Length: 500
Image 1 (cartoon, rainbow, N blue to C red):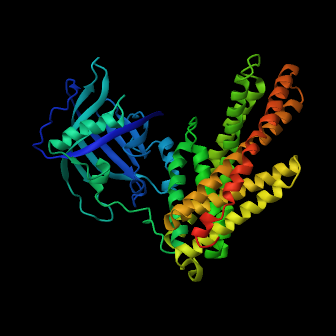
Image 2: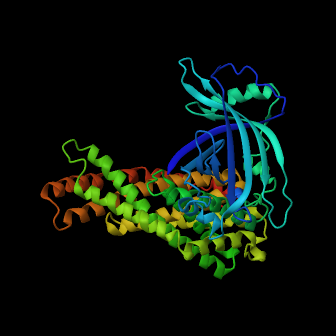
Image 3: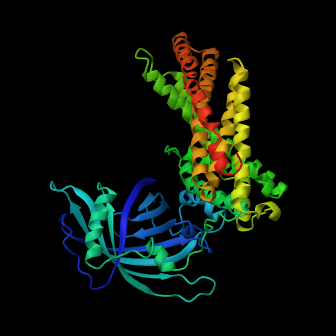
């Protein structure tokens, strides 16, 4: 399974469009005939999320291609080679889109034939910076629900980076626009072929307290789904587990702070399932963080073994955790959670009396409540002597800071700059307390490893040295905590929300 990050820009052009001088060296053209069959569910669940899955023949990249949105002008492409006579989607790719299909069959939805004239764009030394593809496209969607088959044809030009930056692509694109090309009306050949794709995202709304809640949940549910395929990749390590976990935690946090707006049973049920998911992701994430932390620590000890057996054991434990996580993401429980969120967003179970109130006063109350809880928890922790009880209290303060941050973050579109300021201040508290908590967890893990029966004396000694550093360094973030709390306790932002 090969992976590739695709950075490209697309333009529509008339049949008589003539390529202008691009003010860059252009290599000899090569012509290819590309035949692609696209797959999706009957209700186009992949296309609705900007995902394409195709079987392509011809050209220098024939194979199965799964393309996932990865930012502006960027997609992550996952490729598998063509198997002889195989027409069904490979099981590996079916698994990667499970969160979207949820057991629905993948069927052919369109065929696209492209006559491509490809030209390399070169630097002064003849190295390829990008490829310019001049495509004449003939396409037709397969009739669905008795629909009539339509034949379509158009011309488009793609510029795909090889080593070039997006700025380079934009500069080449400017020459095309000046010559009469147009920004592409569709984000992909499939989107243009299908013409009508169901929408998945609700338009942002901030008129009522319920609007704020549902908009925020929808945004982070989309992020959770986007990271799901990356988490499933067997050896992928790009922070996707962390990002998916954060999306789930944000959703759960807002359900908790806005619980008074939601039917109690629905809120509690969704919270429980999001916690289960965050915990499953957290097992892998915590091991990722600890392993990377210990690798950095060992690099600072010049006489220490950089590959001790205990560190290799953690790496193996992390791999086993990833296997358990992938299993969890294939369970009926996970798919039911996704269906529950979809149902929640489609018909929010809101209590009209409260959720229907204007966003500013009602949402401001939720922000203020979370803020006061955060400050109370810190005051309690600050009154305790150093030790396990204080560490636990500081960790509870960190959780409260996280909820305060997410509540203010969700409210920012409705409440403006005061909410943004509060979110930044809570984030600062979260960072400091998180650094301290990471040190506490690291020291505990090192102690467990050192006490484990059979640990060689030389490794136990190194573990002791690492533990001493963790014990010492974990107090450093707390030196900056009083100043951060003092800033967080200022009343002005809350007063500007009308709740100070």
